[in-house]
Image 1 (spheres, rainbow, N blue to C red):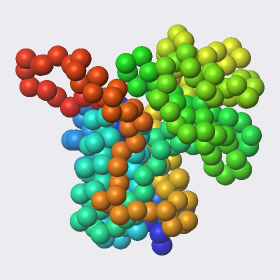
Image 2: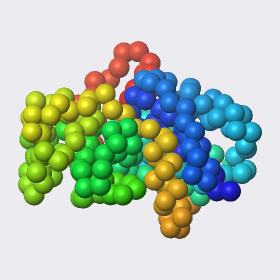
Image 3: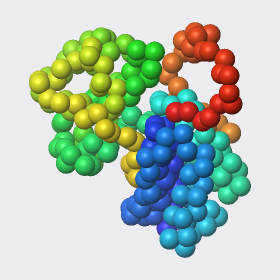
Image 4: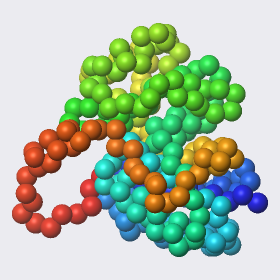
Length: 244
């Protein structure tokens, strides 16, 4: 029996899921600034429910980003610590692809329909990914990117009729995001570990797991932008808390 633990902490929500030979069980919580406190107890509860230990895992999958800088670092720290202890490989999955698979699953989208996912990247930018539904999964039509909202349409929609595209994710709140045939974007949309697990199971079957030391977050934003962001920060006058 193949067993994969999946973890997501790339947004204000956090979730864990256990995939065992095609059957997946998930624990999901909306818990801003509480990922460090919640992830390990959620994993323990899921393992106790299924009477399994980490030693039985074949791999640990995680939403590698893009997403919250803090959340991605917390998730990677947990994943690497567990993977070292349990001596198993890891499988990084695009957060945006996992969100697209959630859309395919919950909206019952058919083959050929497309999904444009947008997460708020702050600094008046979005993390965006364009995916197409196939018979059994979602595939990337282009690389995930960090863009200003005004460039999303030109980057992804130049050759795709807007009527066939579904808009999901909190990044769609920007006024400059494209209007997709008058359809309302689904803003309240978050990554789910169960979809990370499903994508990871496919990757694992193809031999795409890596060792924990090689795992890295997908930030997308380049070093120049990150340095500019740090320069603009104000030194806090009281102790910092985890922030997403």
